[in-house]
Image (cartoon, rainbow, N blue to C red; front, side, top):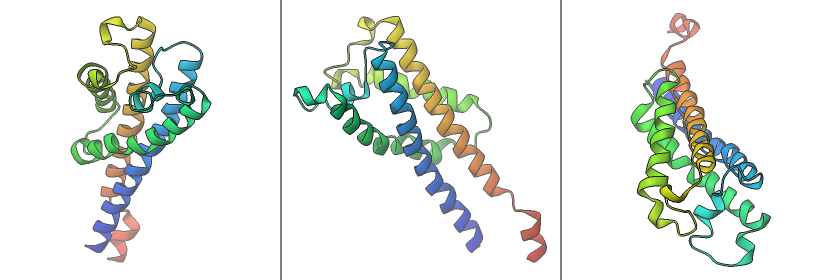
Length: 163
């Protein structure tokens, strides 16, 4: 029984780490996309410029601070995925989860973010770029968490022989 609890907590901790790693990786991709004008929205637009004003929020310092905050905040969607969808197989749940996150943030929560234009005013480049980033985050988190969950549920044959 203790081994089962250890496996469960191990998957939980890996899920938290996976969320942070996904936020960091896709946050960097978001900064690069913003820098090369693929998107008019940066994670600094969401995190810093909504709550703080100043020229420092627009430079590399703002991007770096918001990347750190995003890395921490990205644990929340990974935790939600772990709690609700860890038993789902394949890549499709991650794709749908990423699309769902994008819709929630860019459609429903958009009025909270002052520096993010409304969906109907965004360029198609921004919509496609950000949607792809969210889908990739969803696949990264979803596939990793479900793989770990299913991998830990299968008891290795050597453990069965010992018991």
